[in-house]
Length: 134
Image (cartoon, rainbow, N blue to C red):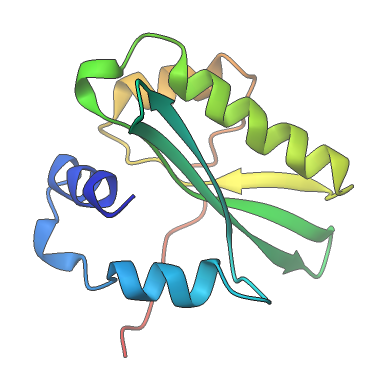
């Protein structure tokens, strides 16, 4: 999973931003009370894609599934792996009766935007991302 996370960071032109480690993935995602859920796609025993989500709460809507990252390694893109991972996330959100699923996509990532539009996704130009790093 970390290899895919680094590949995504390089793709998004931010390779130096990754500070999470395999240990933090294990600590926060694979313990008794995980902070996230994830799924992987494998080809011949090698992980070639992953989706990582967590629950957030909307004061207007209630529980929401947030898709943090959907990654398919470049040689395996265009083979339906991203679609399968995305659909697992959608099915998970519906099974848990979350009110919606949300995610972000970079404005220059046209293939991803087109992929999400194929699902009828709403692309909201009004909201700006804001954060504080600690």
